[in-house]
Length: 71
Image (cartoon, rainbow, N blue to C red):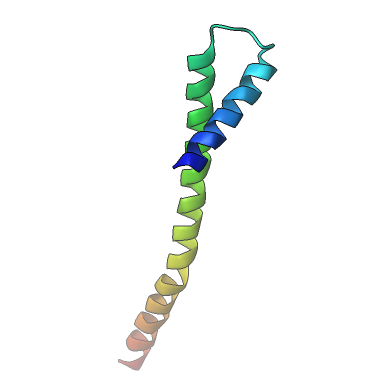
């Protein structure tokens, strides 16, 4: 969890720099950084989940086709 907070903090800092180091926008930078980091984390999880499930689905589909041909 600390890694996530650290990544958000680093990204918020980058956004602050990109915004010209203007004070008064810390919450906006934090929320945007949080959205970006969490979004990319969820995309990575989704890719792993889909990749792991694909071989199982393919094996089931092949088995189903074999059964249909046998009958």
